Length: 176
Image (tube, rainbow, N blue to C red; front, side):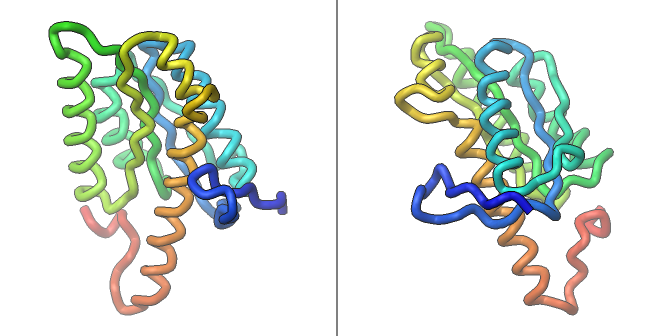
């Protein structure tokens, strides 16, 4: 088993093993060059924590707003332990980027509650491409790495809670 990477959230804390976990990553094609760097960071973190490549499913949607429905599809048609949404919106004077991000957050909440699966947001809302690159391994780190670490920790929490509650049906497929 690969040695566990330390968490980008707290470098003194090792990430839990992800060797038995599976993840669905939904990536926006809009601003693809930025989102691909976020994706690389997320995949790198998942693999460093021991997640096998075959347990990482990557799906693309046209833009950031479509991430919500992509998350719904992944929850409904796959058997992943967590869903990671990756996208970038660049602010404009009309405020369209903020509206998109609010919609994605609302959609992610609905998917989490409906399917009992963690949905993590790796969505960056920035003023320009230079600022976006700072969230892709620059001065602000790689948001993809951070969100993957959050996903691993949320799956571990759910597994631990299920193990502590043996009389409760924990399989999310039984939820719907």
